[in-house]
Length: 370
Image (cartoon, rainbow, N blue to C red):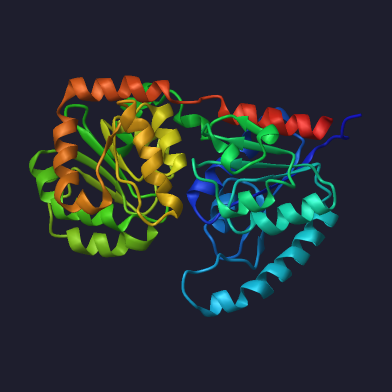
Protein backbone atom coordinates (compact mmCIF):
# COMPACT_ATOMS: atom_id res chain seq x y z
CA UNK A 1 0.00 0.00 0.00
CA UNK A 2 1.71 3.19 -1.19
CA UNK A 3 1.46 6.71 0.22
CA UNK A 4 -1.29 8.98 -1.10
CA UNK A 5 -0.30 11.77 -3.46
CA UNK A 6 0.63 14.58 -3.63
CA UNK A 7 3.83 13.59 -1.87
CA UNK A 8 5.23 15.84 0.85
CA UNK A 9 8.99 15.88 1.48
CA UNK A 10 11.07 17.65 4.09
CA UNK A 11 14.67 18.20 3.04
CA UNK A 12 17.13 19.38 5.66
CA UNK A 13 20.80 20.33 5.48
CA UNK A 14 22.96 23.39 5.30
CA UNK A 15 25.70 25.54 6.76
CA UNK A 16 27.82 25.31 3.59
CA UNK A 17 27.24 24.87 -0.12
CA UNK A 18 28.45 21.28 0.29
CA UNK A 19 25.22 20.46 2.15
CA UNK A 20 22.83 22.88 0.41
CA UNK A 21 23.49 22.15 -3.27
CA UNK A 22 22.98 18.37 -2.98
CA UNK A 23 19.73 19.10 -1.12
CA UNK A 24 18.55 21.39 -3.94
CA UNK A 25 19.59 18.87 -6.62
CA UNK A 26 17.49 16.18 -4.88
CA UNK A 27 14.51 18.57 -4.57
CA UNK A 28 14.66 19.53 -8.26
CA UNK A 29 14.84 15.90 -9.41
CA UNK A 30 11.95 14.89 -7.15
CA UNK A 31 9.89 17.83 -8.45
CA UNK A 32 10.63 16.86 -12.06
CA UNK A 33 9.16 13.41 -11.37
CA UNK A 34 6.32 14.54 -9.12
CA UNK A 35 5.30 18.02 -10.21
CA UNK A 36 2.47 18.26 -7.66
CA UNK A 37 4.68 17.34 -4.69
CA UNK A 38 5.18 19.74 -1.77
CA UNK A 39 8.78 20.23 -0.62
CA UNK A 40 9.70 22.04 2.57
CA UNK A 41 13.29 22.80 3.58
CA UNK A 42 14.47 23.09 7.17
CA UNK A 43 17.75 24.94 7.82
CA UNK A 44 19.68 26.77 10.52
CA UNK A 45 18.74 30.41 11.19
CA UNK A 46 21.32 32.87 9.92
CA UNK A 47 23.12 30.37 7.67
CA UNK A 48 23.44 30.57 3.88
CA UNK A 49 20.59 28.10 3.19
CA UNK A 50 18.13 30.75 4.44
CA UNK A 51 18.86 32.80 1.29
CA UNK A 52 19.97 30.12 -1.23
CA UNK A 53 16.88 27.91 -0.83
CA UNK A 54 14.24 30.66 -1.39
CA UNK A 55 16.33 31.84 -4.39
CA UNK A 56 15.84 28.35 -5.82
CA UNK A 57 12.08 28.66 -5.33
CA UNK A 58 11.50 26.57 -2.20
CA UNK A 59 10.06 27.42 1.21
CA UNK A 60 12.42 27.10 4.18
CA UNK A 61 11.92 27.20 7.95
CA UNK A 62 14.91 28.05 10.17
CA UNK A 63 15.82 26.37 13.46
CA UNK A 64 17.77 28.10 16.25
CA UNK A 65 20.76 25.77 16.06
CA UNK A 66 24.52 25.95 15.56
CA UNK A 67 27.52 23.66 15.92
CA UNK A 68 29.80 23.35 18.90
CA UNK A 69 32.90 25.56 18.73
CA UNK A 70 36.28 24.15 19.71
CA UNK A 71 36.65 26.75 22.44
CA UNK A 72 34.40 27.95 25.24
CA UNK A 73 31.95 30.48 23.81
CA UNK A 74 28.50 31.83 24.63
CA UNK A 75 27.23 29.81 21.66
CA UNK A 76 28.56 26.62 23.30
CA UNK A 77 26.90 27.46 26.62
CA UNK A 78 23.60 27.97 24.77
CA UNK A 79 23.99 24.73 22.80
CA UNK A 80 21.82 22.48 25.05
CA UNK A 81 19.03 25.10 25.04
CA UNK A 82 19.28 25.48 21.25
CA UNK A 83 19.12 21.71 20.81
CA UNK A 84 16.02 21.30 22.98
CA UNK A 85 14.28 24.33 21.41
CA UNK A 86 15.09 23.09 17.88
CA UNK A 87 13.90 19.58 18.64
CA UNK A 88 10.49 20.80 19.85
CA UNK A 89 10.16 23.12 16.85
CA UNK A 90 11.14 20.19 14.59
CA UNK A 91 8.44 18.05 16.20
CA UNK A 92 5.79 20.67 15.48
CA UNK A 93 7.02 21.03 11.86
CA UNK A 94 6.65 17.25 11.38
CA UNK A 95 3.19 17.29 12.98
CA UNK A 96 1.94 20.22 10.85
CA UNK A 97 3.50 19.27 7.49
CA UNK A 98 2.99 15.46 7.78
CA UNK A 99 5.83 14.51 5.40
CA UNK A 100 5.93 11.16 3.61
CA UNK A 101 9.73 11.19 4.09
CA UNK A 102 12.54 13.34 5.49
CA UNK A 103 15.86 13.68 3.68
CA UNK A 104 19.04 14.91 5.41
CA UNK A 105 22.18 16.07 3.61
CA UNK A 106 24.20 16.99 6.72
CA UNK A 107 24.70 20.14 8.77
CA UNK A 108 23.45 21.28 12.18
CA UNK A 109 19.76 21.65 11.36
CA UNK A 110 19.34 18.12 10.04
CA UNK A 111 19.89 16.52 13.48
CA UNK A 112 16.73 17.76 15.28
CA UNK A 113 14.42 17.26 12.29
CA UNK A 114 15.69 13.73 11.54
CA UNK A 115 15.36 12.75 15.21
CA UNK A 116 11.83 14.17 15.34
CA UNK A 117 10.92 12.33 12.12
CA UNK A 118 12.28 8.93 13.15
CA UNK A 119 10.63 9.22 16.59
CA UNK A 120 7.25 9.51 14.84
CA UNK A 121 8.03 6.67 12.37
CA UNK A 122 8.41 8.96 9.31
CA UNK A 123 10.74 7.22 6.78
CA UNK A 124 14.11 8.98 6.58
CA UNK A 125 17.14 8.92 4.27
CA UNK A 126 20.49 10.63 4.74
CA UNK A 127 23.07 11.48 2.10
CA UNK A 128 26.76 11.61 3.11
CA UNK A 129 28.98 13.49 0.66
CA UNK A 130 32.43 12.77 2.13
CA UNK A 131 34.72 9.81 2.60
CA UNK A 132 34.62 10.76 6.30
CA UNK A 133 31.12 10.79 7.80
CA UNK A 134 29.78 13.97 9.38
CA UNK A 135 28.78 14.09 13.04
CA UNK A 136 25.03 14.55 12.51
CA UNK A 137 24.82 11.74 9.97
CA UNK A 138 26.71 9.36 12.26
CA UNK A 139 24.35 10.18 15.13
CA UNK A 140 21.15 9.45 13.19
CA UNK A 141 22.36 6.58 10.96
CA UNK A 142 20.98 3.81 13.19
CA UNK A 143 17.52 5.45 13.15
CA UNK A 144 17.08 6.14 9.41
CA UNK A 145 16.08 3.63 6.73
CA UNK A 146 18.64 4.46 4.04
CA UNK A 147 22.15 5.99 3.81
CA UNK A 148 23.27 7.16 0.35
CA UNK A 149 27.06 7.54 0.06
CA UNK A 150 29.64 8.70 -2.49
CA UNK A 151 32.62 6.58 -1.40
CA UNK A 152 33.23 2.90 -0.77
CA UNK A 153 34.18 1.66 2.71
CA UNK A 154 31.49 3.70 4.51
CA UNK A 155 30.45 0.71 6.62
CA UNK A 156 33.08 2.07 9.03
CA UNK A 157 30.45 4.64 10.02
CA UNK A 158 27.06 3.30 8.97
CA UNK A 159 25.11 0.00 9.21
CA UNK A 160 26.14 -1.95 6.09
CA UNK A 161 22.61 -3.06 5.19
CA UNK A 162 21.40 0.57 4.92
CA UNK A 163 24.17 1.82 2.60
CA UNK A 164 23.58 2.55 -1.10
CA UNK A 165 26.54 3.78 -3.18
CA UNK A 166 25.08 6.51 -5.39
CA UNK A 167 27.69 9.24 -5.70
CA UNK A 168 26.98 12.88 -4.86
CA UNK A 169 24.04 14.80 -6.32
CA UNK A 170 25.12 17.79 -8.36
CA UNK A 171 23.28 20.38 -10.40
CA UNK A 172 22.21 18.95 -13.76
CA UNK A 173 23.53 21.89 -15.74
CA UNK A 174 27.12 20.84 -14.91
CA UNK A 175 26.84 17.68 -17.02
CA UNK A 176 28.04 18.27 -20.62
CA UNK A 177 29.40 21.78 -20.07
CA UNK A 178 31.68 21.46 -23.13
CA UNK A 179 28.84 22.51 -25.43
CA UNK A 180 28.55 25.81 -23.49
CA UNK A 181 32.10 27.05 -24.11
CA UNK A 182 31.18 29.85 -26.53
CA UNK A 183 28.25 31.00 -24.37
CA UNK A 184 30.54 30.96 -21.32
CA UNK A 185 33.19 33.12 -22.96
CA UNK A 186 30.53 35.63 -24.00
CA UNK A 187 29.11 35.66 -20.47
CA UNK A 188 32.50 36.51 -18.90
CA UNK A 189 33.62 38.76 -21.76
CA UNK A 190 36.51 36.45 -22.64
CA UNK A 191 38.16 35.39 -25.89
CA UNK A 192 38.79 31.77 -26.94
CA UNK A 193 42.38 32.69 -27.88
CA UNK A 194 43.59 32.94 -24.26
CA UNK A 195 43.68 30.32 -21.48
CA UNK A 196 41.19 30.60 -18.62
CA UNK A 197 41.86 29.77 -14.96
CA UNK A 198 38.90 29.26 -12.60
CA UNK A 199 39.65 29.76 -8.89
CA UNK A 200 37.14 28.40 -6.38
CA UNK A 201 37.42 28.92 -2.66
CA UNK A 202 34.12 27.27 -1.77
CA UNK A 203 30.92 29.14 -0.96
CA UNK A 204 32.40 30.86 2.10
CA UNK A 205 35.89 31.38 0.69
CA UNK A 206 39.31 29.84 1.33
CA UNK A 207 41.88 32.18 2.81
CA UNK A 208 44.98 30.27 1.65
CA UNK A 209 43.80 30.04 -1.97
CA UNK A 210 42.84 33.71 -2.02
CA UNK A 211 46.16 34.85 -0.52
CA UNK A 212 48.14 32.60 -2.88
CA UNK A 213 46.33 33.98 -5.94
CA UNK A 214 46.71 37.53 -4.64
CA UNK A 215 50.45 36.97 -4.29
CA UNK A 216 50.75 35.53 -7.81
CA UNK A 217 48.18 37.69 -9.61
CA UNK A 218 50.85 39.73 -11.43
CA UNK A 219 52.27 36.50 -12.91
CA UNK A 220 48.80 35.53 -14.19
CA UNK A 221 48.26 39.02 -15.64
CA UNK A 222 51.72 38.97 -17.31
CA UNK A 223 50.97 35.54 -18.81
CA UNK A 224 47.69 36.97 -20.21
CA UNK A 225 45.66 34.28 -18.46
CA UNK A 226 41.93 34.99 -18.17
CA UNK A 227 40.86 34.60 -14.54
CA UNK A 228 37.48 33.82 -12.96
CA UNK A 229 38.02 34.20 -9.23
CA UNK A 230 35.37 33.29 -6.66
CA UNK A 231 36.70 34.67 -3.39
CA UNK A 232 33.76 33.75 -1.14
CA UNK A 233 31.73 36.36 0.75
CA UNK A 234 34.16 36.67 3.67
CA UNK A 235 37.16 37.76 1.58
CA UNK A 236 35.50 39.61 -1.31
CA UNK A 237 35.71 43.26 -0.16
CA UNK A 238 39.29 42.88 1.11
CA UNK A 239 40.49 41.33 -2.19
CA UNK A 240 38.70 43.96 -4.31
CA UNK A 241 40.42 46.75 -2.41
CA UNK A 242 43.85 45.09 -2.72
CA UNK A 243 43.70 44.61 -6.51
CA UNK A 244 42.11 47.90 -7.60
CA UNK A 245 45.39 49.28 -9.01
CA UNK A 246 46.15 46.20 -11.14
CA UNK A 247 45.35 45.57 -14.80
CA UNK A 248 42.11 43.62 -14.39
CA UNK A 249 41.01 43.52 -18.03
CA UNK A 250 41.22 39.71 -18.01
CA UNK A 251 40.25 39.19 -14.35
CA UNK A 252 36.68 38.67 -13.11
CA UNK A 253 36.21 38.65 -9.32
CA UNK A 254 33.03 37.40 -7.63
CA UNK A 255 31.97 36.73 -4.05
CA UNK A 256 29.75 33.89 -5.29
CA UNK A 257 29.22 32.33 -8.72
CA UNK A 258 25.58 31.66 -9.48
CA UNK A 259 26.18 30.21 -12.97
CA UNK A 260 28.72 27.53 -12.11
CA UNK A 261 28.06 25.64 -15.36
CA UNK A 262 29.37 28.60 -17.38
CA UNK A 263 32.38 28.99 -15.07
CA UNK A 264 33.33 25.32 -15.62
CA UNK A 265 32.62 25.62 -19.37
CA UNK A 266 35.03 28.57 -19.70
CA UNK A 267 37.82 26.99 -17.60
CA UNK A 268 40.94 25.31 -18.98
CA UNK A 269 42.20 24.63 -15.42
CA UNK A 270 40.46 24.88 -12.04
CA UNK A 271 41.99 25.59 -8.63
CA UNK A 272 39.71 24.29 -5.87
CA UNK A 273 39.44 23.00 -2.33
CA UNK A 274 38.85 19.24 -2.17
CA UNK A 275 35.41 19.14 -0.58
CA UNK A 276 33.28 16.22 -1.70
CA UNK A 277 30.82 18.33 -3.68
CA UNK A 278 33.56 20.29 -5.44
CA UNK A 279 35.22 17.03 -6.50
CA UNK A 280 31.93 15.54 -7.73
CA UNK A 281 31.32 18.63 -9.87
CA UNK A 282 34.87 18.63 -11.27
CA UNK A 283 34.46 14.96 -12.26
CA UNK A 284 31.23 15.66 -14.13
CA UNK A 285 32.48 18.86 -15.75
CA UNK A 286 35.72 17.07 -16.74
CA UNK A 287 37.99 19.89 -15.57
CA UNK A 288 41.78 19.55 -15.23
CA UNK A 289 42.26 20.60 -11.61
CA UNK A 290 44.74 21.56 -8.92
CA UNK A 291 43.29 20.65 -5.52
CA UNK A 292 44.30 22.45 -2.32
CA UNK A 293 42.81 20.40 0.56
CA UNK A 294 41.63 22.42 3.52
CA UNK A 295 43.55 21.46 6.69
CA UNK A 296 40.68 22.68 8.91
CA UNK A 297 38.32 19.73 8.44
CA UNK A 298 37.59 16.61 10.47
CA UNK A 299 40.06 13.73 10.01
CA UNK A 300 41.78 15.65 7.18
CA UNK A 301 39.13 14.19 4.85
CA UNK A 302 39.81 16.70 2.05
CA UNK A 303 43.33 15.32 1.64
CA UNK A 304 41.84 11.81 1.40
CA UNK A 305 39.34 13.06 -1.20
CA UNK A 306 42.13 14.71 -3.23
CA UNK A 307 44.45 11.69 -3.08
CA UNK A 308 41.72 9.49 -4.58
CA UNK A 309 42.01 11.66 -7.71
CA UNK A 310 45.76 12.16 -7.64
CA UNK A 311 46.36 8.38 -7.48
CA UNK A 312 44.07 7.94 -10.50
CA UNK A 313 46.10 10.60 -12.39
CA UNK A 314 42.89 12.63 -12.51
CA UNK A 315 44.05 15.79 -10.68
CA UNK A 316 47.10 17.53 -9.22
CA UNK A 317 47.42 18.47 -5.54
CA UNK A 318 49.23 21.32 -3.74
CA UNK A 319 49.30 21.21 0.07
CA UNK A 320 47.74 24.15 1.88
CA UNK A 321 51.12 24.86 3.54
CA UNK A 322 52.86 25.02 0.12
CA UNK A 323 50.19 27.00 -1.73
CA UNK A 324 51.67 30.48 -1.31
CA UNK A 325 54.94 29.48 -2.95
CA UNK A 326 53.73 26.86 -5.44
CA UNK A 327 50.06 27.25 -6.42
CA UNK A 328 50.19 29.93 -9.12
CA UNK A 329 53.39 28.45 -10.63
CA UNK A 330 51.75 25.01 -10.82
CA UNK A 331 48.65 26.52 -12.41
CA UNK A 332 50.72 28.30 -15.07
CA UNK A 333 52.69 25.13 -15.77
CA UNK A 334 49.53 23.03 -16.20
CA UNK A 335 47.42 25.52 -18.13
CA UNK A 336 49.94 25.60 -21.01
CA UNK A 337 50.53 21.82 -21.05
CA UNK A 338 47.88 20.53 -23.46
CA UNK A 339 48.95 16.90 -23.08
CA UNK A 340 48.69 16.93 -19.28
CA UNK A 341 45.36 18.76 -19.39
CA UNK A 342 43.95 16.18 -21.79
CA UNK A 343 45.17 13.29 -19.61
CA UNK A 344 43.64 14.78 -16.46
CA UNK A 345 40.40 15.51 -18.32
CA UNK A 346 40.02 11.93 -19.59
CA UNK A 347 40.79 10.40 -16.19
CA UNK A 348 38.59 12.68 -14.08
CA UNK A 349 35.54 12.12 -16.31
CA UNK A 350 35.85 8.35 -15.65
CA UNK A 351 35.36 8.99 -11.91
CA UNK A 352 32.10 10.94 -12.34
CA UNK A 353 28.71 9.56 -11.31
CA UNK A 354 26.28 11.51 -13.50
CA UNK A 355 23.20 9.59 -12.33
CA UNK A 356 23.69 10.11 -8.57
CA UNK A 357 20.70 12.43 -8.09
CA UNK A 358 18.34 10.14 -10.01
CA UNK A 359 19.47 7.12 -7.97
CA UNK A 360 18.94 8.95 -4.65
CA UNK A 361 15.44 10.04 -5.68
CA UNK A 362 14.64 6.44 -6.68
CA UNK A 363 15.66 5.37 -3.14
CA UNK A 364 13.35 8.07 -1.70
CA UNK A 365 10.49 6.79 -3.86
CA UNK A 366 11.06 3.25 -2.56
CA UNK A 367 10.73 4.54 1.02
CA UNK A 368 7.53 6.43 0.26
CA UNK A 369 5.66 3.74 -1.66
CA UNK A 370 6.55 0.68 0.42
